[in-house]
Amino acid sequence: MKLEIVRGLFVAAALSVASIAAAAWHEPGTQVVSQSELGLEPLSPRARTVEVVRPDQDLLLFMFSLSQGMGPQG
Image 1 (cartoon, rainbow, N blue to C red):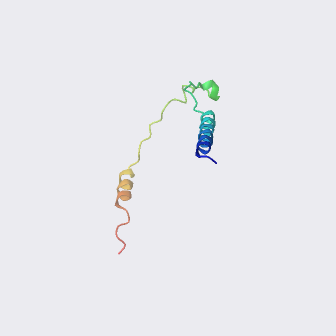
Image 2 (cartoon, rainbow, N blue to C red; image 1 turned 90 degrees about the vertical axis):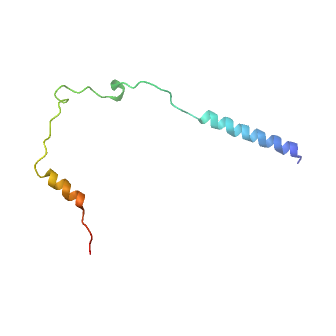
Image 3 (tube, rainbow, N blue to C red; image 1 turned 135 degrees about the vertical axis):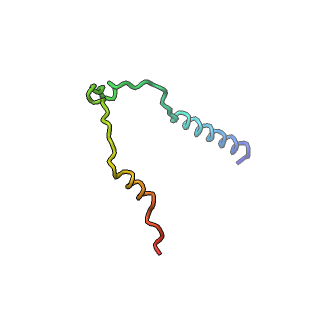
């Protein structure tokens, strides 16, 4: 087979693969998603309240013991 024919077939195959890849490429565009599309309902005012959690007196001792680790074993 002549070199020109092989080169032409290679270019045609490369272009067909590139066109198939370009046709299969799909990037979703930017869009706004609303709560109604997701099936979510807004929170009630009672659910929005945040309860303040106060640590107990042993928390500092616990954190100190965690930072010390096991130490050398021998």
